[in-house]
Image (cartoon, rainbow, N blue to C red):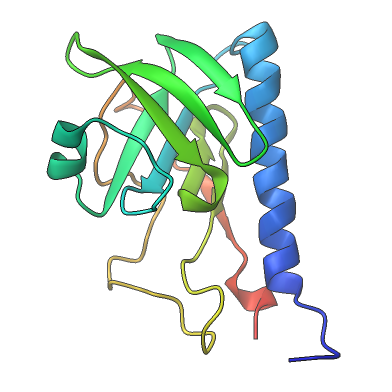
Length: 159
């Protein structure tokens, strides 16, 4: 309400800025060392762009992996585009930052989780799956043997 500081949304904005900064650095210099990313995003987001067959296969959310092979990473103010390999079929994607549900770099046990209920009564849109760091729809890259990453949930900052 008026007169209150919305720390939850401010934190989400800051953390999405962090993701943008990390991706910008990767687009300019490549992935350093063992770093790689699991990025889970909302495929129903109106600005998300992906092939129809991917949207059909992942009607709610999809987790992509940026690790050994990716191409054409372009980082913008509102989202990023990247081409990833899906079973020897390169596919371009555009992922808006506000469609991202989780961003995990298991090489350093770092992760962020964004809850989806940002403007209503404070009860996040939880489908009961816990929205954990273990990606439900892994689609690209070799990544099965990774340490669990600690996920930072920003819900407790929200009213």
